[in-house]
Length: 117
Image (cartoon, rainbow, N blue to C red):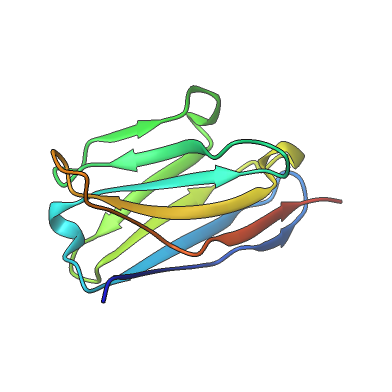
């Protein structure tokens, strides 16, 4: 059974930082494209960042420079470091695993990030 379990979300003030973690089980993330997506209330789910098995990263243009995605294949975990958080970053953040070239894809259950003073 494949599971992606996100953690690290919470309430943070504007300008603060959070690090999200996504621990995978049942699949070796080393061969998957791992990603973070987010969904704010009333909005569609959107890409935050992805990282390939070779470590190539891709970010939403609006988030470049503030967010950093990384992976630790030995721990089967992917991370999202978020700095300089803004109120508009408030959303549920989802972890995604995609086996490139196939339709095989898994989602985590999401973790809430709330940026508020």
